[in-house]
Amino acid sequence: MSFEKRQMQVIQLAAEKALELPPIKNNYWFLDDIRDNFYYAMHLYTASQDNRISLTADKKIAKERAEDILFHSIKLQDQNEHSEYFGHWPLNLDPNPELAEPNTLPVEFFGGLLLHFYNKHSDSLSSNLLTEMETAMFSIYKSDLLNQNPEQFIHHETKIFVLQLMYGKHFNDTAMLCTGYSNIKAVLSHSKENGLREYGSLPWLWHWIQSVDFARNHMTDETIKQTLTELLDFLWKERATFYLKGAWIGSHSRSLPHDIPKYSNTLNDYIQFGDLPKPNIITRLEGAGFISYQAPDSIRQLSIDHSIPIEVKKKVNVCFEESENPFDALHHYAYITDSYAVGGLWERTNEYLNEQHRWGVSLPVQNNLSINQLYFFHPGEGYQEGDARHQSPNSQVIYHKNVVGSLYHQLNETNYPFIIGFLPKAKWVRIKKNICADIEDVYISIYLHQPYSITDKDDLIFVKSYGNQHAVVVEILAKKEAENFSIMNFNQFQNHIKAQETVVETSDDSISIMYKSLHEDIIKLAYSKSRKLEQIINGHSVRFTDYTI
View 1 (cartoon, rainbow, N blue to C red):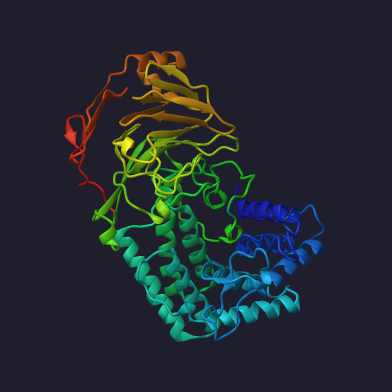
View 2 (cartoon, rainbow, N blue to C red):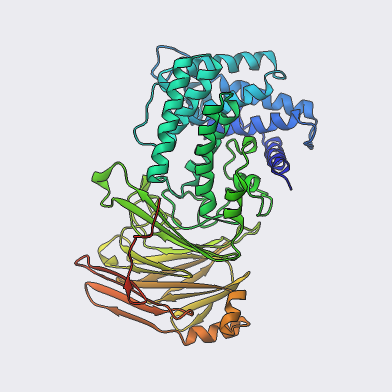
């Protein structure tokens, strides 16, 4: 199926979801986030105007409903030129949309999407909505929002630079256009030189990609367009590098509930790569149906072809906030096969709202109830009961191909004297200190040093283990790979696990684990309270000399 057909499927899916939405209050579908009113209305409107897309409702009714939502939502913009929020919209509309306070977030992304939508549909929009859009865009253009230059090279800034490009061109403002181009070039140069600091953060990566995509579609100057193409290729290559059939592999600088423990924000992946089931839910719509740039075959092959397992070793330079970060660089490891992936970050850092996801095992995305990621962590700042995020710094890790090991230390000194784990749905079998499962195309074994409890939930298996010192080792094996070890079924896999060599040593101030994998690799991870850390694979200490940007 082509890129364009998958794009139309996503637009149709969003439009049908919009048709099911009754207005919550007055003239809005959503009160918690104004942006969702924009996103769903724009997809519904686009579907009503495209003869290739069928809808369950009359298209004239669909058009009118979309226009009504857009009209009232756009009218909430602060258009007082003396206001510090001139050109901005509120974010939360509850309880009274007309009195909601402006917020700096909505316009960053919506400003570019609005102009993109206007360019596409201005000939068919009703006159009153057209007028509101033009007034809103002029307010954005005249606001102080666009008076920004690169400082942190993150998604917030990049979206503003995209607006400088798009609105500079739309309003024939050469100075603004040139400023935007200079800033985008700086972002591209910085990213190529240092890597993407917002590693693994798909909420933010999708804002990068969609915003730059809209700008590229808007530009006619070939030099500017080529720079935007280079930036899009950089971003899509980042996504493709840590991608397995819809899943994000390894660490996230920010994790949201739809990113872990099950990755469900698959709309952009589906349109671009098409190697996962067609999405049947929407967790974060944004402007997904409007992306138009198809990445080169080399990038798409990088994401899709995992017939030969690969190791990914990526480095990200830490270019600011050094006072809060003890590392000069972060090192991201991943091992990717056709059936599973293992990956994570070697370093622990304090990310936004303590939402760093350190490591995980990823399985391909399926349209089923089960989660598709497996990981353990010790709860930290921001954690609440049942939370799958917010990890503490009390952990150490080691990665080697299909194995990940982690230690958790001095937990009795914290608010949470336990670790927790999230496992995909399966029949987990206890074997000594291991639990094992047969899941889809893989076998999984987990070593747990301390006693644990297992709770079977609707979409996952929840593990909890109390104690001061913990050791966890996860080993995963594809079934076709297992045949190389004369493992032909799950019973034979369990017999191999019974013979596994695992040695854990603990004292009041130290813990270590030595593990021999099915590949006969010997992995040692040790940590003492004096902050001495050992990460040894087959007798050699882990080094990062072969990690590249």
